[in-house]
Image (cartoon, rainbow, N blue to C red; front, side, top):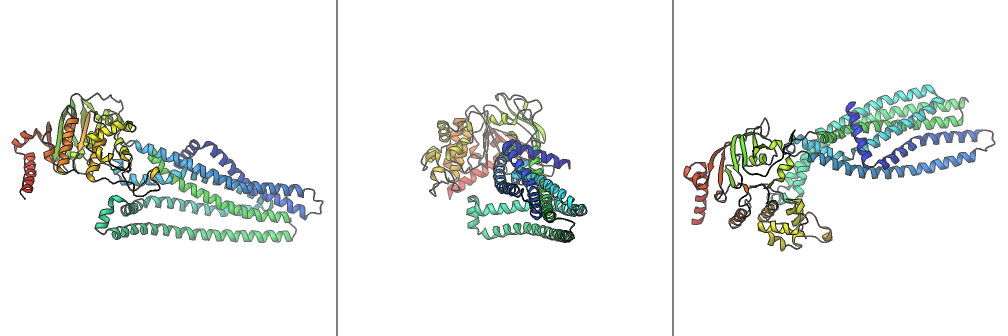
Length: 603
């Protein structure tokens, strides 16, 4: 009960913040809609009693005018309610969605985004951004039902107090059943979360451009469609079973309600025949029974909807109230310009208690003003080390120090503002070429000269200039710009190597940062382009701190220091020539790659 009240309070505050005047109007219209049926029933009773009387009929005109006026306002009330509800829905959805993703923004690391349960909860939270208005609507429905039921029950009690008590008792099982069904439906939505996400996953594979080539080459469409349909059928079976249960329970309760109404009507007609009640009383009795049943059904349904929506809204509030995945520093320290270097001191890391150790006590110093390369087998921990440097995770044990300051003592946004990076799995945004570069530093979004300078350093300026709309060309065929909405095929898809250079331009936009991290920056480039990129990197970052990760050892041979990771530790450290002389893992890997190139040249 306490949780429900907290969620109800949260939903009400959200709606009030988003549209206070519309909410006030909606509440007023709800109250009027609640008393309207009772008012009409009483006016009709007086009119019938007046007509059945001996006359004179001096009040008939006023009663007719009153009935007409109430009927007119009653006819307008639903339309006003629909308008206010729709506008509330728009405003509240916008506000709720903004608050939700503002909360998601607080998760500055990556761990939450690698939890399936978080994705299930976030999906439900996104689905319930309209829940606040539905909760308010349901609560208004409860209030409307209570007022209408109270009015009709009061009217009914004037005619037959015993029958009024019977009507109240008959509503109890209906309310209990509806509340149980609401809880079951909400619980089912949570259980079906993984199923629905799988269904969406297969749907995306069948419809997006990223998977289109393999899906068609390997003939996967039927296979993926079958899996998508299987997931949907699994969800449908569970929902169908619940629907059947709801149908039979509601059918039985409705039949009992209809029998009760028939019995009451027989009693009223019999009593009128014996002269115990007037014609107006019969009219009021019939209207009250119908009104009470209709209002009770609405009331029970509103309570059920409120219960369901509050449970679902709980997912939204859970995301909003979740603690940050990376704890903020208790006493934040100012991060100075990097003068000495970055030290990894006995760093251990694994992604969870159930996962194996990725790093097993790494000790490494990255000196300021120079370039260091990280090499090693796949899975050696190179990319994980980069994630720790960017503080996407914190070390499980040990510490990472920036000129002696633990990264955990620095606000994470301040730390990342001092870095630039190209990740191995860089993003291809469905934006314009200009925006694809500008996301590296949004402060440069309107500075075309800076964007073009970064593109020139990455060797992609001429490619972008030659596009149909230059830097303004959309690099996608999924969307159209406003100026091209009547044309098709105007978007441009870049090659893998061109996208790689664009990602480099994004990083070069932040070339003045203290640390630049380059995780496989030339993986998608040919040999000549790779040589060109690394030449530009050396020119751009001379005297600056850079960390380069690459499987192509020829690309790292000019680094000031090369660290070799193996089995989660730094196995070797030194310059290229020194590591070759040591005849260890680096020398073996370099010799293997070099011999491969020689064999290719001989053939």
